[in-house]
Amino acid sequence: MGSKVTYQEAGVDTRAAAALVDEIKADVSRTQKQRKLHNSFGLFAAAFDLVDYQNPVIVTGCDGVGTKLELLLEHGMEVEAGKDLVAMSVNDIITTGGDPLMFLDYIGIEKLQPERIKALISGMCDYLEDCGCILAGGETAEMPGLVPAEVVELSGFCIGAVERDHLIQPDTIKEGDVLVGYASDGFHANGWSLCRRILSEHGSEFSKAEVQSMLAPTRLYHDVTRAFKKGEIRAKAFAHITGGGLPENLERLFRGMGADLTIPFWENDPVQKLLAHTDAEDRFNAFNMGIGWVAIVSPEDAGFACEAGPGGTVLGEIRAGDGVSVRVKSSQ
Figure 1 (cartoon, rainbow, N blue to C red):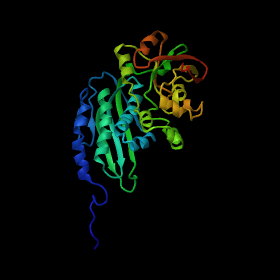
Figure 2: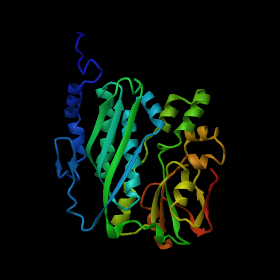
Figure 3: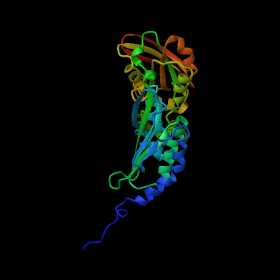
Figure 4: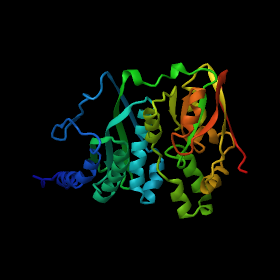
């Protein structure tokens, strides 16, 4: 009879995984300062009481970090990867006018790497603490033989709620409404397959510091939506500018209408160096081009909207006719 094999010898250490759960408790507790779970069921599931909402509608979202993750891991920027993971889902949630309540993560890895995983979760908790969203649970899966040693699979899931009467209503958009854009902190987590191609071919043109600066995490735009709520100003729509850039992410909001946008020159030297290697038209469909969030408001609310978050600026107006065109102001 052959020798017996343990689970650990097969490449999965359940005891180390259990110990890791204890080690991240301090980070997880940071995400329950503004909100608390109703109960957690032995780490199998978690509950949140919607008692503070009168007529709640649940909103959900999920996303990842895309191919940007490869460079983040290569540069030891796991904390930034955790922030990206949260922002990509939370920003989608808050386009509804809702509140992000609970977040769950999935980490797939060849072999448990506690320090790397703790850094990822620390980054998640930094952003979740900022926006008052609870890290309600997650899954770290060791998958030897399936996930390559240098790879980490990363997915995030957000659950939120909004009062039915406060749901954003894009169908109220009409001609003459104003589009206000807010600055991005970089390429965020979209367009990195193109970025990686350019860096692989022209890497000698970029210093390590320049590459790392372009890897800045996706900005959270909860400050903008909170300002609207505090000011009791209702936006017609919010758009999180991700894959497809300004044209695709805006066109889905106002079918049958369009807009001609003028955006500020993107004052970011490493970004401009990379953009010089991209097609002059295609770049607007791959990157946010310096505008990571857009609010569509009535003309009388445009001034307020511009003050609702850093970099707020009027981009244009809704017009008759399909399509969104984008041009850049002179850098002078």
